[in-house]
Length: 598
Image 1 (cartoon, rainbow, N blue to C red):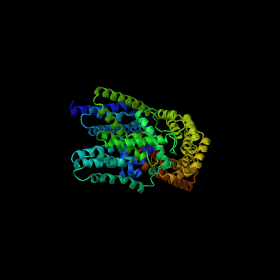
Image 2 (spheres, rainbow, N blue to C red):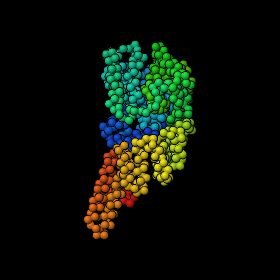
Image 3 (cartoon, rainbow, N blue to C red):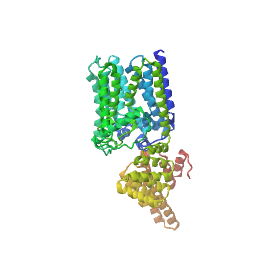
Image 4 (cartoon, rainbow, N blue to C red):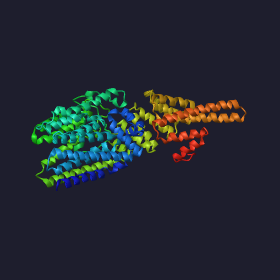
């Protein structure tokens, strides 16, 4: 088959198989950090570069893409999942063209099945079906395309035509997720493996690579300039040495997941390793050193250089999140997304070495891709429902408090309040310092099970752990508001707002409190006027106007944070009606498609 028809067929197969495997992802919901990063992220509500950049400077490209998706679909999960699946397909195409270049001519079957290996491997599902891991897929895509364009620039006698896109993609990767800091080293690896015997014609290697290394400096500079940013202060309660030893053991699990992707989990109850002599630690260190030694050996042998590049790339891509820089989650599957390109290259190189057995290698590769695709499809079905996802995770790691809490949150969102309360109580048993569990129990007993005594108990427990916990004051304020104790409620909501100035619920509830106070004074004014006490009635009316003005101020502040939040618009309409501005109120009700009494 000629090159073009084969390429077209390969691309169609990649797209078709990818869509089939990830079809369940289109029905998936938001999970975990999708809440604070998307649903509750005010910076995404307006397509303005400044607020998005300040939210997370080194992930500006990721969050700008999420802001674009928000503009298209608001909080409907479908367009977010559509975008993630599209990214994964595009990344798989990048892998296909990289394999074509690295394996050389007459390796059509290996290049196709290597790309399919990357596409359908079950370990990739977390980076695709978990929306906020768009950061991983986006950075990896830019990373891979940067390498591809760099290769083309070297093949094309170093002309600027391909070099500029390589540099642009490098910037895209670095501002999508921080692990892209390894890209210049990956290009250095390209120079000393792929082009070992072909130095650049226009300028030396150092000159060509210098701009990429300069780009990487943006990451530490932004870390320093924005060191107060919450996302640059990961509360990882583990030393660098312990984290490194733990990662040695995690490395074994990563290898097992690539070879045998069974018993996958969103979160792993992975023990911290504090000693070289702890079970699995020494084995992990030796496995990593053996892999590194094998990569160096292969890179030095001309016939094994492609395999050496794959092995070295795998290790290099793991380094930023699996070395000396502690992260709270010691192991997550999406960290294998980019390194899997190295594994795909090794797989393709293995197939290329079996060219004397074309039928057998085709059957072997086809059977493996079908098996992996089936496992990935089943795993994607689990991502459709938060309850199914976390019930599966609890079954595999029942003693992990955060996994219990995530299952409780899934039950809460589905309206299964008693089951949710059970899970949050189990979470507290496993981790008495889990302040979020106390907060969620308070919410359940305030809003759903209507037991304010128990709610108060959990509120006090949360504030005893964390006196500056905004949700504790917010919940206490809701209890006062529900019992018509407006002034105590206002004090609690103002405290919550002092601690968290962008708390939408605090703004909303303060607006509701001041509207109720205004209504109360307006009723008193009417009663005084009926009794002929006109001067006192006017004083009460003035007080009502002041309270209504405060209510409008808080509601307007909330709308500035989230202009699309219908709750604020409808409460504002009620405020206008209370002030006698019927026409303004009715206009808002009509705009939001509800009756004035709803």
